[in-house]
Figure 1: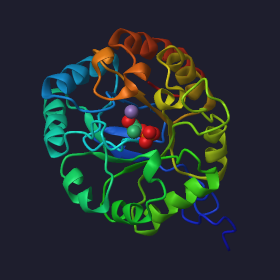
Figure 2 (figure 1 turned 90 degrees about the horizontal axis):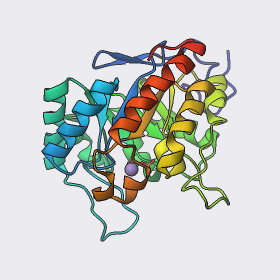
Figure 3 (figure 1 turned 90 degrees about the vertical axis):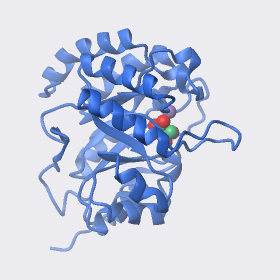
Length: 276
Ligand code: PEP
Ligand code: MN
């Protein structure tokens, strides 16, 4: 049967059953609602281990944190690189949480892959086709963030690059798009959640932290994401966000807010047939 969608392997026509990805004891794309939480950037062993303990206690399954940071300006903190990967490993050893961290260039895929459980490809790299191909050959799950100006079709075509190299474990991440609205950092396109579920068998997680850019909006938009059918969540949490080394402290939840949010998500998750 010919597949009419331009994204072949990613399409529902190719595979109707939802893709379920098992990683570090957690399943993404099934009944579970995994939560990936942590700071924007890894800043020290103490910082990442402290945050990992806090988010694990509240029910997260993965610790996130950037080692290689794609900053808009060249003079901003660019991340501690391999040192930060070692700090993430310390947080995993301490808590058992899986690691999610960004990889920015094809030549760092091997190094990042030695530490991470899932690669994150950031919004600025969604159309870095050499990088897409390289993680397609890496044999670890990939969280593919939506390009800030990408259509849903362009996003699925980016996923197709990874799938076409033989890596079936792609998780899409809606993180907000650029619109004419300037009050929020981005416009979180929750339409994408049911649209992706109609068009594709791949799981989709939502990142309301970058989607809003404003701490006070994150909890409401997280709840809306779960109600819309998200397969998981990616949230920035920092124990001391006012001293965060990236500008993303303004969108990072305090640990007690994260804990309350995790509790308040329970009935919403149950209502949509999920376990959190
Ligand atoms: C991040 O997750 O910290 C990040 C840089 O995200 P994005 O690529 O969505 O801006
Ligand atoms: Mn960030």
